[in-house]
Image (cartoon, rainbow, N blue to C red; front, side, top):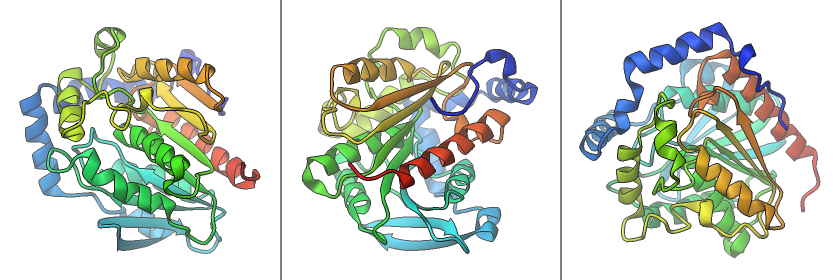
Amino acid sequence: MLGWSTDPRRRHPFTVLYMRLMWLRRDKQAFEGAQRTLRTARRRQQSGDAPPTRRVRWVHRVGRAHRHGMTVWSVQPRRRRPVVRVVYLHGGGYVHPLTSDYWRLVSALARTPALVEVPAYPLAPDATVDDVLPALVALAADDVDRLPTVVMGDSAGGALALVVARRLCDGDGPEPRRVVCLSPWLDATLSEPEVRDLEASDPMLAESGLRAAGRWWAGRRDPADPEVSPQATRLDGLPPVDVLVGDRDILRPAVETLAERARDADVDLRVHEVTSMFHVWMTRAIPEGRRTRRALVALLRTTAASPPG
């Protein structure tokens, strides 16, 4: 188990206020209904990806390159040599671009010390999984300074991390050392009956818009296809997988399904469920987010020090 508390009595008062503000802002409106979801996505896509913040540029060495048909940002320490490489796949329901919150997490990961590569991949509905997945696999397969590679992502990016790792382990490139899925969207259909009950406690996500985004991303595929909904993917032969999820996240039931399947397969999959936390809390400027980011850095250091295989 990673080093955070799951005791709800220790939830910071600032976090309680932060979550109340999320409800007041109606953050989940971004995924309420297909038409609203599409309008919000188009507006944010027009604004474009948020580049690394000034603070990230001040603290770290930041690069930008065009690789495999995508803009790829790199963040690493200025003076220390990285001991691990992280390919970080951002979330946003496959329809939202990078936001400034991601750079808070990326900056923390780079302190491992790590080289963190963040692709600004094409988004739905203009792009589908078949358009984007080959480029992400090729990026993850790059041999960068012979560093051990960790594939990590949140939400939709957490699902992509598992799909990319599956492809790499099936022969499309060198196998990653570890996979880390943060609040992953493992079932694009949201078919578990518990989803509807959880939506009332989730301050960020709504099932109607998510289902529409999942259909757009699937393109010609069935949204239940394992490369769109990786809760159904083959688990044999994967490297260690860590899944982090809050108990107020409507995506949690699919994580539980994946964990049940992992018990029957020869795979090291650990689920870290955090009480009273919402979707992708580890990117936010709250005390629980900082604790989780520190725990992720510790996990990366452990991974870098462990032998392959």
